[in-house]
Length: 266
Image (cartoon, rainbow, N blue to C red; front, side, top):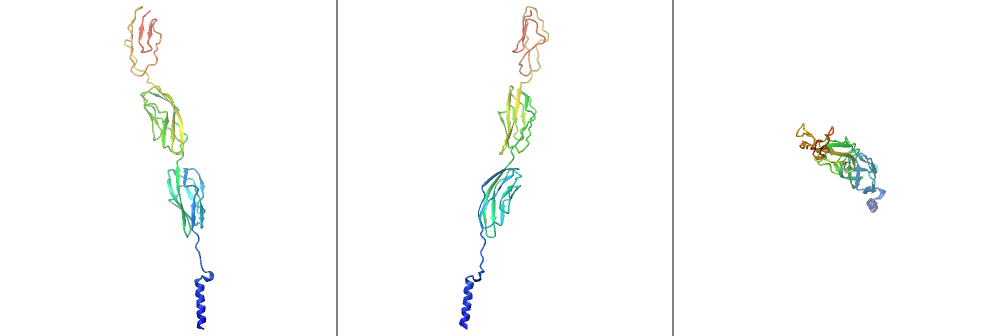
């Protein structure tokens, strides 16, 4: 009887050691090999992102997470890890650690996201033709830009001497120092995404002559005798032409060089 009980006990111990009765259990596989199709995502502020869906092998994913949080307007799906949305703020340029996990383990992928600003558009100045006078400050020409922000302002060819363009808002201002300019200038507002341009013509004229004075306001001439040449003074500006109304008496002339009146009264 004792021998029989010992055999029964030994048999039970053997069954227990072998996992008898099917009482054993196994853990679910952890996700592995998480991959997105790109490692560097560039998108424009306000532009709808084409959904970016990853692949993942091994075990089923029960949770998707991102560190740090995605830029405003972008989300990650808890169903399949797809990143989608429309970014609302430019300036982001960071690495994001995306993790697919379950109760057993996890797998990671690093995605860099760069969000660029909208390109500037519809650049316009108040006037497309500016007439300036040498030595006189021009009315500042401040433009408008309809979209995006401007990182840089440029002009080709260079503005006339004495005029500048502001890197803050594109205003053209200053006092031209040299007359004779009459050219078209291409002003460009740009950022990393794109640019917009406007053509403005600038003409710089010389200052008007002023304070014309002759030595005598009254000249008495004798017929057949040369008069004393009357050479005038002009205080400002360059004289391009001299004229007299009515016509001078016969035999007298006015110089187109300096306005001197000379000759013989006939």
